[in-house]
Length: 238
Image (cartoon, rainbow, N blue to C red; front, side, top):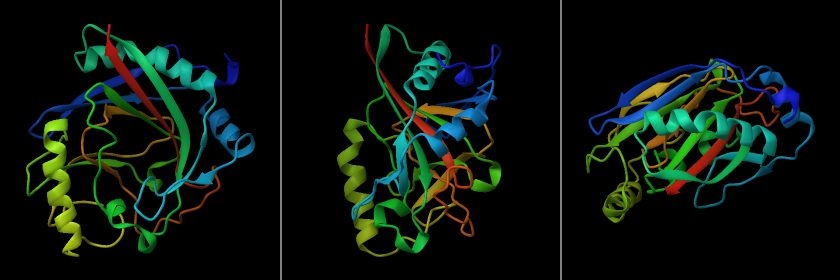
């Protein structure tokens, strides 16, 4: 493993529950020995490209993260994830990771980018969000959909949730810009601030959204923008 991507020998972990459905949120403080090396890599070794389209998607640019970093993080945090989320009889499946920077201006957002989302309905996929920026860049928040009461979207709930969500969007009542708190259709359950070298881990099926301050300059420069490393890991039955 590249020495500059080494992880700290002792990690500060905390676990909380979110909302009425009790989904867990695992936080890790100060993951890396030299987190600045990962920022340097993003700034000098990879090329970022816009990844969203007219229907939505991540509202910014992405680039591949180094495989030795991804492997080190997954191997180190997987035992803690299995304990925190009560996983039994599983083994690691796949992992994918990219550097991400929010660059889409609030007035340019597609309707689906203005509301909370889930990454998948699979209860064995987890998001590991590694903040490589400071608290002024905005954190992440978790939500309940008021009309359905859903905080997590399972396969059984997906069709109903999407139908109600799409109807609300079609009515034109969603506020413009990034969601940053309660509104008519969503209640914020919890939020976590960005902090340099902080990692948060949550099931990808919980409704969530980045907390993008309305006055934040949305710069594509990894050293100045809202840089994160986004790892998605999946487990499967052993």
